[in-house]
Length: 636
Ligand code: F6R
Image 1 (cartoon, protein in one colour):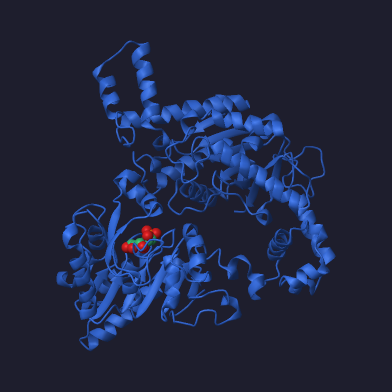
Image 2 (tube, helix red, strand yellow; image 1 turned 90 degrees about the horizontal axis):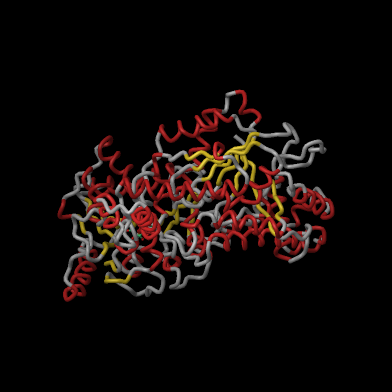
């Protein structure tokens, strides 16, 4: 969407936005949105500067507003916009952090905005995280009074937490809350974990402006980027306002705009079920998607959907050109043709409607696995079939995954070495000492190397079990990952070169890769972007014309049924074999380091997921399989 400015509109004012309770704008290009928001701020500053009037800004920290701050700095440098008359109030600060702490919001604001504009130091207000507990109440009341003194906040910028928080107003925060000390939610602390190198270093409380403080602002702009925010955004925009989703309380404000990108808005009804708001683009993808939805909603297999089902569920538009019967058959056939036991193509069979080509009979295949285990966790059954059906399969582990090996696990091997060789050198003592704290992430190169080796050996055990020769297993050790901490570097040319070199040396007919686009900062996303960039670079080379790319989903979620281009059924025995291959990754069993909220082991999660998709296929009208692994084709 290309816009010149963001003007407030009544929420739900068109049929397209009828489920939305707060004014929401969606942008294809995040950069464009950031520029427009910064421009709105600039215009107000320039207007007020002319009258010698103060502009009061409410500011947020975190990744969301960074682009806006960059634009403001550019306006200052290139257009001489002065911030001398600007007064700022930050939303929050971690309690217990000094101003010069690397992760303090004081530091963040200085580094990302204040150091590069001409704002007066006295005009900057950020809650002080070092205030003595005894004086906090008074301090917070004064913070409120200062905002009032300046006539209230003109424009308040907000991000949104995955749990729907605004500022550090966590779920349960009261509509009447003002600036105060709060306990941080587990989710919030977990999200901050990479910055603090482990959850135990993340502060447990913070000072934050209240919901009432925020709602008193004259204009509020909430920004949300990336899939990670889509659920919180949906709830805040479409559910009735409630304190469990603090951002939903913004619905009571009469000049609030939510600015979203395509990913963060993906779950809004106008995007996820456009037929509900009369915005049905009748292309094949939409027809397919809406009929899968209809089948799930009515709990009827596709072939049993009636004309009435279409009419009663806002899908009558589909019946203008085709009968419901024709639509049912088309969508049913399309789904049925995704199912194949021959993920590398079935030799000597008619492949007109099969997901893969029959030729060449023996394909060269690369399975890219972001961590050493995603290959078996996400596509262990398909991997096994590709090998047993005679293809030349290569596995490429993109990162070492060494951060996910616990100190206890590494210590086990150090002690084994010590006992076996009866060697208690200083070197061993040092390692044991470094590993003595179970929870601390040890940056030391030797420890990280050992952790990498543990994962390499586990991977080889698993790939041998599947029947792969060691020479077909490639440990790429992409450098962006090797920081020795949770936070990774930005991927660079070296990472790209390693990927391209491997592809060029194998000349694959098929590439399988983890298509997890959900977490914008996660390793899977970096790995898939590196693949996409490699494909862009290599596209023109001859052998690439024969290369098809299939995306699998990692341990966390599944493709929607309508997105799937290839579904490989697994028999009960194959499910067990897959489980065994996952078990070889011993360091990742038994409640691993980065388990997330889900207490189940990886093999359990994935078995349940593979089962769930088979049940879903069955409910849509397909045969009853034990489990399925699914793939989406990526065209480059
Ligand atoms: C930051 C703040 C938080 C963040 C929110 C989103 O001052 O108050 O509410 O806006 O947690 O954080 P990011 O933008 O890092 O996703």
